[in-house]
Every structure is written in structure tokens, then in C-alpha cells.
Image (cartoon, rainbow, N blue to C red; front, side, top):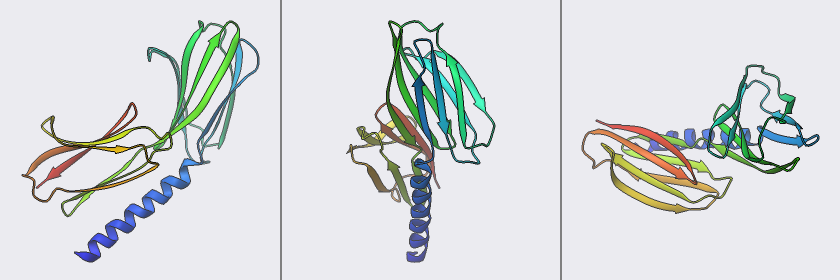
Length: 196
């Protein structure tokens, strides 16, 4: 049992280290050229493809593109002349990494916000223990919830720390289907748990 826990911990640590390494490998920049055009530059791992989405402030998709190339760098000039003045979000997803950039178009000017990076959390369930690891790059409020049949049975606020490491002992719960949910700001990550 002790060896199994060590192996599980080692696996979680290796997965966590790989995620941390990968986090530095997705970068998104928007470089305004003039009032109507901007260069979008995406840098990813050399063997990863990605998808790119531009949404308005109501989350309506304005533009979507899948880039299946495995080249590490992507640059394209986008014509934004047809966009109305307002707030927009550029989102790039590559594997478990997501990078977002807000930008505003107003009176012939494009203003770009800070990049926000999100990595999918690691969930694992073994020997009655549920583990959750998450890198909170954006320092957002986090909460961990546990549900059975859509009914909340456990809730914990875990703050705004950078590194979340949580473990829940589920060994005394009845058999059935459960769901662990991590909320980080407006993001929701879920993980199904089957207790037998």
C-alpha cells in the first residue's frame, strides 16, 4: 500500500512537472499594425497544433480556425476593419494549455490586454484517495466541490494561491458515480469518480 502511494505520488509529480514545463511553451501576442489590422503571433510546442477563436463580449464566436501545422510559430495579419468598436477575446488552445488575450477596438485604435494562461488541472483517483493539482497562473479564486447525482456533498474554498495540491479521502463513501469540480475564476474543470 505504501509503495502504491509512492508510485501514485511520483506519477502526479512527473505529470505536474511536465505541465509546468509546457506552460512556458504557449505564447500569444496581438501586435496592432494600424487601426484596422493586427498581427497575431502564436508560439507553441514544435509538435503541437492548436485552435484559435475570437469572441465578442457576449461570447459569440466571430472567428474560428484550426491550425493543424506542427510548426512552432504562427504569424498572420488579421483585418479587423469589419469589427465594431467593442471588447473581444482571442483564445488559443493547444493540448491542455489555453492562452487568452483581451483586446478592445475603439475609435480606430486597438488596445491589447495581458495574456492569461490556463492549464488543465491534474485529477487522479486511486485507493480511495482523490488528488487534484492545479497551477493558478492567473491567481484567481478557487473552490473545490464534490457532487453525487448533481447534489453538492462537499465544498471547500481554496483561495488564490499559485499551486493547488488537494487530496480527499473518499474511502468511506457509498458506491456510485460522483463528480469532482474545480472552479478557478470563471473556469470549471470536472472529473468523474466511480466508487466501487
